[in-house]
Image (cartoon, rainbow, N blue to C red):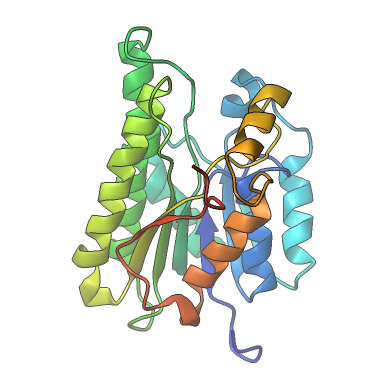
Length: 254
């Protein structure tokens, strides 16, 4: 980014924990020249095994501002279809028009073919697929940046067996994102999906950690920073020619 020019604004969803991928993305974007708005939703973290992290939003905000970036944290229930429009209103008013949209939020509660409830299935699709579509649509409707500068990156996953509603809804998000690469062509906005593979954010037990390491040629787990570096590249001018892709970034996991 040109240090003398105003910083463009990135909106990163699902930034609820300091150890998470979203926090790493937000800080990396700030370090590479972006102002950053980020969403969080404490009720989701509270019902998950890791629990809500006290002070996370403040700590993440401080890390972003340490890079000279402006920062805005917005609580956002993305299961509500009215949230995306309200969110863009708040971010535009607080920081300015959005140039990059990074979809990192997710509903992720393990269940398979036989134990998934209709309620859980619908909630996964509401948060992971419908909200992704509505956020991308809102971005497209409001984008005013120079042709070729707009970016959309969606975090996805190929984990479906035993995690059916999560995997299926992420598959839908893949297709929505790749459609955006074509349907937003008149704006010069690129859109890609990134699968970071199993990433060490504190949710794995030791048995799973060992199994994942054994299946990865580099003999380690992915880190949030691994994902963040790729996403910052995709959002940069150098990443412009990559468009409409589903990118595996998992260290060669078998």
